[in-house]
Length: 122
Image: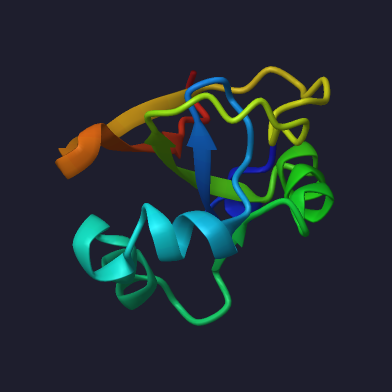
């Protein structure tokens, strides 16, 4: 993977504990208010156009970014329910890559935010 391309894009995803990608319209208004769960902080810290919020509608595009090695940071919110949905962000075979845990935070309601950075050294 090209490490210079990796640094360009951060992906923020909201996943249920069964690994299903959220419909952000639902979870953002019902579960993950951006002012309570720190989502606004990620947008404020990101350069314009470098943070992509994955959802059911753009999952294919985000998978392409991952497959092309253009993602340098994964911000994964895990919400404590089984959605039974059929859209998974990581549902295709991606080339192996190494990621380092940068941080984990547990919010009210047992919502977890985990941040991983691409690690070219593996």
